[in-house]
Length: 208
Length: 231
Image (tube, rainbow over the protein chains, first blue to last red):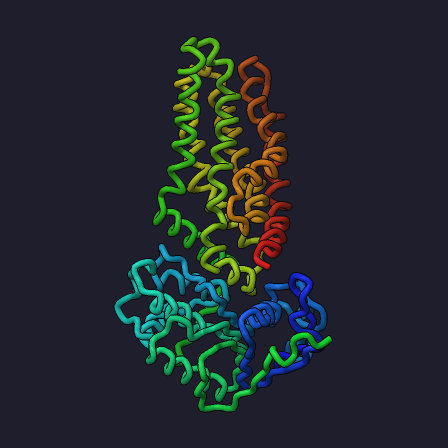
């Protein structure tokens, strides 16, 4: 689905990675590992298209991403460090806007997804009244609503409680079994019921 | 969970963005009220500082109202992308399959509706306070209606460029104020021309042309600037 060829990136005159090749296919979960500052977030931002400062090529379904940009943006979901949730709005309003940005209306699904996320009864409460973990769940509800076939998740387990972590692991495994692909970073020990591939940036660092 | 999803066209998606922006504005009224309060207070200082001579006030009224409106618009601009940048919504906007051009245009429109339009509505009251002669009212309102959206669009370019910086206020003013001068010159000039009894339709046409130019070209610049800021 997504493959990267010869990726190169440096920051502050330090090479984060070079000649990095990998690909993810349907049903695959790819975990990017590395110490703090090894460039995991940078790599994910390069992959999703937020960071244009890199060398090499990224292919979506065999085509260079800039050529199939709209299809790529429809097929990819990115979850970053920031929740992308406006705190003055309610979860319902936030998710409604997110769906509209993706080009569909899923109002009847939103409540269902929110209650599956353990947020039943919170749909009309402004997000600033919710805890960090609950806001994270609203953010994860976006993932559940998106029609993407590739998830790019940057530290998705942050702020979640034990049950939340277990639920998310189940969701990721389910998504992969249904033909999706996942690229994620985490420092948490993943317990997925599906095959996991690991890419370790530390072993690549400094290689030229 | 196989509920059929209704896919949305560009228009309904833009309508959703407009509604979201207005909802956010209503939830944080400070962003609406502060520029308006600044406008009212700054204009009210002129009679206090310069003496309550109606003839003199009437002469400076067009310039005072226009300059203060320009500063009030600049003051309001900082909030345009700030919260979206901080909470990550801007990333999602940039990654969405929707055309960024129209999304930023709608964001600026929503911003004008909640900050620019109140300035236009408040202007006649302040003009009355400054004893603006009667023939100046219509050109003042028409000029502000055409000019404030242009100022918002120009200001949004600077805001988009500086949204990643912690204290962007002065930099924003340095970037944007020089670009706003044509609007100021024609806007205040239109009222003065009317006070001299000359036709103003030509100047109104220039202001209209500036608005068309700004609304077609600035979304491109705003989008490009946002991509730079988010990197």
